[in-house]
Amino acid sequence: MNQWFFAVLLAALIATGPTFAGGLIEPPSLESQVRDGHLPSIDKRVPLEPAVIDLDAEGKTIGRYGGELRLLMGKQKDTRMMSVYGYARLIALDDDLRYAPDILKSFEVKESREFTFRLRKGHKWSDGKPFTSEDFRYYWEDVANNKKLTPRGLPKALLVENEPPKFEVIDEATVRYTWHKPNREFVSWIAGSRPLEIYRPAHYLKQFHIKYGDRKQIDALVKAGHKVDWVDLHLSRDRWYRMDNADLPTLQPWMNTTWPPATRFKFKRNPYYHRIDTNGRQLPYIDRVVMSLGETKVIPAKAGTGESDLQAKYIRLDHYTFLKEGEKRHNYTVRLWKRSQGAHIALFPNMNAKNPEWRELLQDARFRRALSLAIDRHEINQVVYYGLAREGNNTILPASPLYRPRLQSAWAKFDLTRANALLDEIGLTKRNEDGVRLMPSGRPLIITVDTAGESTYQVDVLELVHDSWLKAGVKLFTKPSQREVFRQRIVAGQTIMSTFSGISNGIPTASMSPEEFAPTNRFQLQWPQWGLWGQTSGKMGEAPKLPEVNRLTKLYGDWLYAENEDQQRKAWEKMLDIHADQIFTIGIVNSTLQPVVVSNALRNVPEEAFYNWSPGAYFGIHKPDTFWFAAE
Image (tube, rainbow, N blue to C red):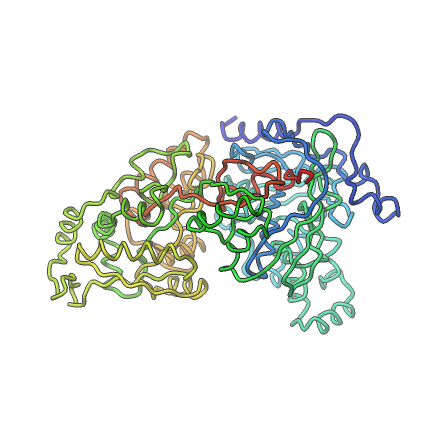
């Protein structure tokens, strides 16, 4: 039995405890519905074997029912944050970044090829209908493998060497997925902030599926909803991640009750939620979540006047002083959590730029190293981040067991002498009257850095990079745009360089996927065409030309087919070393602080924690369903 399998199996077994004492306690807000017969009693709503949350073990307190949690968001699509924050997953990460059953009662993994999932008996969707293996079968047969609903084919996480798994329904509460080779990323995708959702509420969606629904009724709904056909209708009803369909049943702690468009979305407690505390109280403690939409630029001001009970989104460190000033007047506290990205801001040389002269230059490691050496990270940290950030590369952080100091320091110390020497070595010795180096074509060495136009930090940081690069004979221009245009330009090779946040998971363990460090996705800003090639198994994009990048692809494969955690660790370490040496991306600072505004009445919110998309789901990993309001 290899170590990875043992660790996963142990987590699965441990998570089946603890137990709760006494009977189940009905949330007061649901008592009238139970009394009137609109809802069954709590003992008929929660699973026969609920997920019991030991709050004492997590350093939290047993809560009281009730209250309304106010959130501020900026866009209609921000309703998806309720899926992220809710973080109810088949398998979830705990505070120690271990995988454990959540919606599932248990799971077993054999050789990383065979995955058996067992559901909680009696588990129900938010509308009270049973959650069973039929929901997995419906997704597999009628959604994922339906060429009209999923024209691009199965999600990447369900393919190993382009081969799908064998899917089996064992019984009403058990399903199994088996691949011909290991699929080490399967569990991590399921536990993700935006998870691989391999089930659907079949009882609800079948009415919109041409295979099951009434054709006349479907045609009428298509016409009434101004849809193209039944496929368009089904897709519009199945936007599970957006949580904007008020009729779509969910397994999350809160369910949406508001149809878009709206400026105020109300989410009420899921009466069939699967988690309880050790005293028999069904979670969540809080009855309602109200999400108010408005201009993103005024969200810090609204949070500073007490209009949100829990706010981090759309708030930056430079808002901290203002927010602190409002603490006493508006009964909240500002906490500082650490962000866990590999870099708060990084530069991404587009090694797949269409311009051949730029492509050759950007693919030269000496050029990338010179640009990194010519950045005064200490100055940027002091001026922009008040000296509170960590200076270094876009790589993993000290909190990761894979961390070594060299990973952050390689080619990251401000050294203009060495930077200039490297640029001279490349042959960029000629300069114009302004001191800007000339490229072989005679054009000035001016790097245009594209931004998504979403962060004032980027503007401030790039101004300082401009000043230090100029001392090395390199000029920088900034080009802001919208995120969609920003990504399209990069993929098309129209950009020379871009800036964005660094790797999303800066605190990985050996069993977590190193896919961010290999060309695996077309949205990887440093090598979009190589990433597309990896993403499509060579069907699209371009094959990597650099030996070091091909080495990363091989090492990623070594990780995928490793027999144990020790082999996974070795693959990780070699990939990290290559990145430290090659500087495929240029990190500037990391370990920045995230202000979190917390109402003084809100309990069980950690004083100190990490705030990150992946892993973490922002607040999700800290279980917002256990947050509660003290009586005022």
